[in-house]
Image (cartoon, rainbow, N blue to C red; front, top):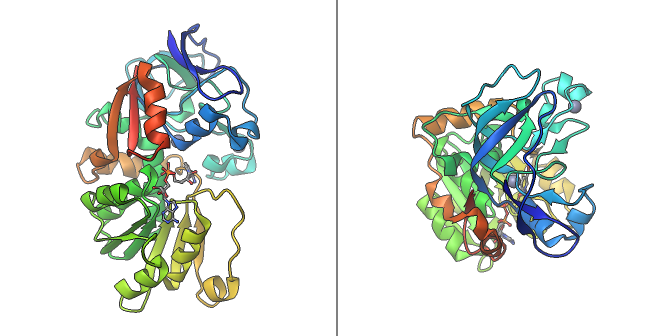
Length: 343
Ligand SMILES: NC(=O)c1ccc[n+]([C@@H]2O[C@H](COP(=O)([O-])OP(=O)(O)OC[C@H]3O[C@@H](n4cnc5c(N)ncnc54)[C@H](O)[C@@H]3O)[C@@H](O)[C@H]2O)c1
Ligand SMILES: [Zn+2]
Ligand SMILES: [Zn+2]
């Protein structure tokens, strides 16, 4: 089969013919319908310090976001059958640790990541533990199915901050932030304030239902959020920028008793005045690592199936798998939203 393989510690990857995966106990073979490029793939593609320090063994097939059809089930698989339409959760839980036994398998102590610590989905076929292949409604287009993994992170943030009827700031309008704007809209947030430094992405946020867009290279977004809420501050902010000064502005724009949902991964430590920004404000800070397995998937599937959540404008490019280099280029330059690769 054809696959995009990261062969060695240089920049880039190659398309080549590789052996079909062989199933072990508890795994399924999936035929990829569509896959999406994520920031994590980008780290591995360019082989930056994050990739070098994350126990990734090469050569490896890139990619972890996909929709697919189950074409073979391995020994012991009971939850799936041939022909099932699935999307994949990247988090591979061990099933045995404290978190796995107490309803938090998405933050398993021995967590492995599909397409990072295993071969991934930028290929015609892949294999994945059956627990990570989630059946989804046929009404969801394969290109949308391919981005359910990052969408789930954005949906989960909105569940955690209970955005219905609230004023929500979404900081950073990359693919995940844009999907957080869509989810806020679907959840019935009253005010949706999208913050970024990129006007193209703010334009997409507007299309997705942002009530205000704020270019934080032109104004102090913290002050602006307070101004837009008549001096109160927003009920919650969702950070999907990973930029430390943008996150600090989020705290400044947050009302007393507000909630901060943190998705973005800063490349350096963040220094914050805990007294004014957390203690006296009684801020609730919620770390978001992916989707709850599987509550988030259920909510997301229901909303998409009933046409209550629209993320079509986030998908800006659909390319053939062979055009992966072009896809990585577009994603790296921030020229698009989500880039889909179709094998
Ligand atoms: N927690 C998780 O489970 C999880 C999963 C995947 C990705 N992530 C992280 O989530 C973040 C978002 O992912 P993405 O794929 O959308 O990334 P992205 O890099 O495409 O988007 C980040 C956005 O933030 C904007 N930004 C940068 N500096 C800013 C500033 N000062 N003010 C406002 N906006 C600013 C950028 O212009 C960009 O649009 C990244 O940090 C990524 O590493 C977290
Ligand atoms: Zn991803
Ligand atoms: Zn575990």
